[in-house]
Image 1: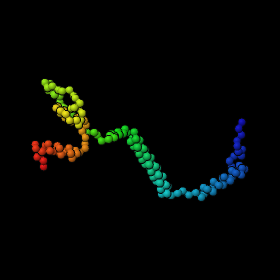
Image 2: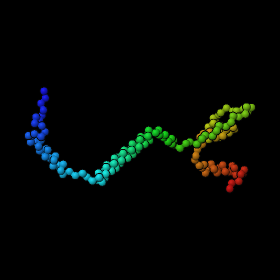
Image 3: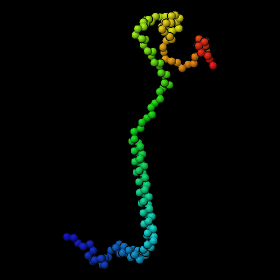
Image 4: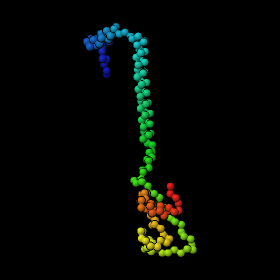
Length: 154
């Protein structure tokens, strides 16, 4: 069923292209010279250095990328935000309740309205948040005049 490709055999071929390839092969074999062992070794060492450098760069990239990913996945706790305004001073603690046997008078307009002059029995200035303002000269003079007899001022 199948016929041989070259009925005359490899030596008896009359194909011009085959004979040209044979001539080129014979010419190349005659001119080829093996490299010395030192140059072959040097080429191998260069190739090995290149491979090791590529592996080292790859390892550095993997470690660096893994570290960056780990840092990115760590939970971040934000610092507490400072208040918008400065904290207000604490209010004074409420006065203790009067003893059980003392009568209390109901509030009247004369002793609840600030700045009114009237009987000031049992009530002082209205309770409110303390202020951070410095006392005025008029109020400090009246205060110092009333306490001048009791204490000496430096």
